[in-house]
Structure formats: structure tokens, C-alpha cells
Image (cartoon, rainbow, N blue to C red; front, side):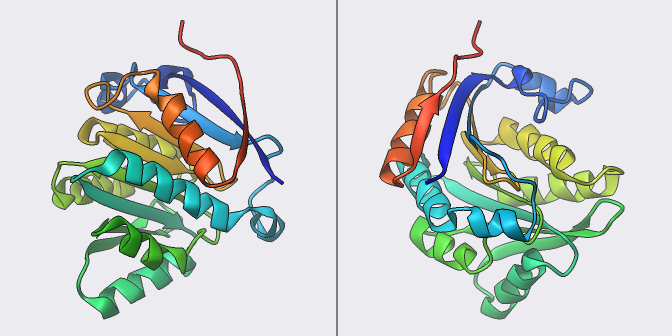
Length: 230
């Protein structure tokens, strides 16, 4: 069974998320973050995907989102290699015709990026499940009262501006949107989850509690590293 390590602290202490050159990032530097990462991270690839407890990851996301969503919107995003599962998700969304969604190329390598506003949580996750995890990429969920268009505009700009596409750049662009979200839940290519909480939506110490409760509901084994809050 995969064991996860949970560590919490202010966003500015997580280098893969915090971009001191970004005004949006600086605005959320003190937002509470809880990262739940596999103790033994594998390099992204076919073997890493086989070893990942994908069903448990989705149960974790479902539990976490049910706890925090309430009546707010849920925005989902997936970056993937060109012609990977994000592209397939885009085709499915187009065929269904009942979801607000957008597709674009992210960065110079033309990775696929698909956004969608998910309706009822269970139905939205059932749609996502078929295309999860990305072939080689990352995902995010944003619980927000903001309009889908705000996220679409942000990502259209980020996609044009990104000259270094990849995990760190994408995660920083996703973290920057926490200024528009009550809670942001990111997942990188190794299966690590990162929750970012707006202090007006939840207290800093709620970050670990929410992650721990969702992990328990999903049957995931966790240990806790020392907090990074000073």
C-alpha cells in the first residue's frame, strides 16, 4: 500500500508553487497549504501510473471536495502531453454538449489543456474518471464563486506566456488562481495532492484536518511531517 506524507505550511514555503515574480502569487503567499505526497515518488511514466492507486486518488478527491464545496462552482483542469487523455476529455465534452469547457495549447510544446465547469460533484468526477490520470501531466480542482470565464481568461494568458511548460510551471499557474478560489486542489504527475485554502474560507490548521479526513475516507495511509508554519 502506498504511504503518504502530509506537510503543511504557508504557500511561500513550497517552491514548486510559489513564484515571487508573480503579483498573484505574492498576494497568496501566506495562504495555508497541505501537501499529501507519496513517500516513494516515482518518475512519471507507464510504470509510475501502474503503481498509482488511481481509484483511491479519485475517492480522496471526491471526499475532499464534498467536505468543502457546499454550493460553490467546481472548475476542473487537466494538462497533458499532446494527443493524450486531456485531448480525449475535450472530445467527450464536445460530444456531450452540456458542460462549460475550454481547450487550448499550453506552452511552446503545445501540450493540451482542458478546463471544464463540473456540475454535481459525483457526476463531474464520473466524467473525469475515464480520462484520469493524464498520460503525462497534472490536474486541478478549484472550488469558487467566480465565473468560469475568469479561469478561462487566466489560462489563455498563462498558456501564451509559458515558455517553459511542465509540472512546476503548470502548478505555479494553477496555484496563482487560488486568489479566485475558496479551495484549490492540485495533483501532480506523481500522485501528490496539494490543497490551498483561502484564509477567509478556512483556518490555516484546517488544511491538514481536511486532507487527513479525506485520506482516511479513501483508505489511504498517511504520516505527518513537521509543520512549516513558523
